[in-house]
Length: 200
Image (cartoon, rainbow, N blue to C red):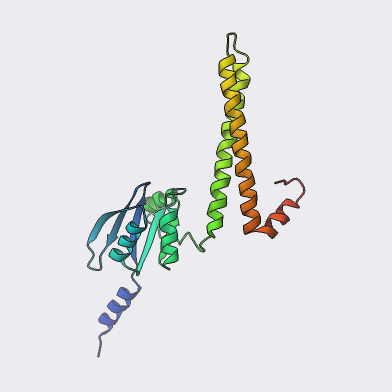
């Protein structure tokens, strides 16, 4: 007959979570994980599928993988973990910092994996946003340069040439985004655009 203490120990072992912390960078993934015996280990893998496979082979399928949201650098590993039905969380860097400071338990941040189209559209939208800022910056440079009390024709010509190229490339991205949204969420796109004051 098993003792109460042994039964409790078994329950604790069964419900204990194994976490694998992943530091994300452009070329590599730095992995910190703890073995069943409590030993803390570190390894580094490449930021590609062979590296992801090595990570899965080393840590296994019973781990909760946790990584920082790094814009685009974390998405390759995120898709890999999702495709292989492994448990993972993508958290904001500030959340990680606050967790370390407060020593509080966090809830999983990714309740549902977004469609790949979401990331494609978000990347297009971010690029458009960045180009809009560059266009505004160049327009301001042109406005101020024209007021200079010295010869600035060459500078203005360069600025105007860059501005024209940026506007052309921005238009291409906007067209691509609209096409992607129309293919992914046509009904939602039409519904949003039907709201007065909201255009493309």
